Image 1 (cartoon, helix red, strand yellow):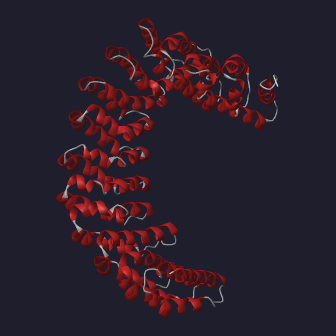
Image 2: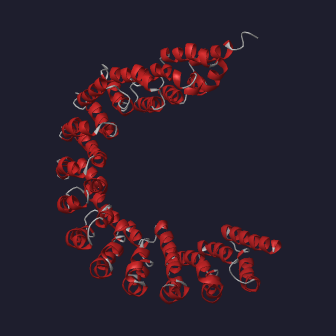
Length: 549
């Protein structure tokens, strides 16, 4: 029996050297089981060194190994032995495949954040320095993601060295290294003392913002928001604000796009007053950018941005741009605007909504592009809260009913959304209002010669019935469905069966027996196989309910 513990490691080593990648993967994923069988000491002495030397060339195996090692502290004897896990992960930080390196960095951060301070100084900080000085750019890329773990426990001289090393990485010859330094700057800066933050980190940041590669500059935009949160307001205005304003006019549209996307966070960083004076003009420029991608990002933030302004400023500066965007040449810009513009109503208040926003809503509701119209309809409730139901029904609802007669109705998603919108309007404004404003127009469409319109009416009825209640369903909706069972198109007839199955629980049992069941029995003898199938299903469903009650 003495040989028993040798068995798993022997199997593991065999499997790890096997040509079959699946076997190698399985044994890596079973590392914790094997470590438990070996015990802590042999795991430290045999298993981990073996993994350090294991130069597998398959990325999937390496990725699994990087992940497993991140949770391995308990198997090597706890935090005091955590440093034995660093060598294999250090090797993984230098491989070619990005996702393996990222996972190795993540695991190192997880282990480093649990290590004791003296172990960090003795083992972790030297590892960061080695990677940062690595010959291959892959090592230097990985190093950038570890500074925020190493820095807090470093002794004073090491701290200065780490800051200057990071500064060198920000000026590395390889753009990939500078990108990694730019994207990790916020995390590192959060651990640095305020005096050094203002001196060292801000000068590093300034260099990144002037990098000749737009891929580096656009990551520096994210840094603006992260650093802005760390700086005192007056320092933020002095250091961050000019950078944001410059970036909003950057020659690369990708950088301007990033600014447009992050603008709200950037405003939070600099505070309300500078936002009004400096960032409103920058935002207006982005809303009028010559690249559609930038306008899309900016348009999507218009409501959020207006919330931090006074209504007067929003009306004066932002609304003119919104008007322009509502007839933008790019449908995607109009769609992005439509998805948020309804939220401007509560920000601007009743009068401005009626005077300025309603005409814009109307033009977007008549947009030729389906998504634009859908985005407006689905947010109507936000406007209702501001201007009230009467005004809304006078101004916007005629346009919505027109929509229900849309020439794009071949598109299933539009029909579905239109039916859902009618249901939402009925829920929002109540059955009486719906009976007055939408139900008659919808039911009229059952006479349309095009069968897709008739299909939509049936879909709308199945959604409206639960909202409208039994009485209206029996008197107004059910007769339309029963009449449609005589339609000449099989598609309509089997949809009648589906609708009857959906609405029978709402109505009285006598109605089911007198009206619904006879109709389904007739359909169950139809020549079309689908019509027979769905009507039989509906009849079964009625029988089941009757039996159980």
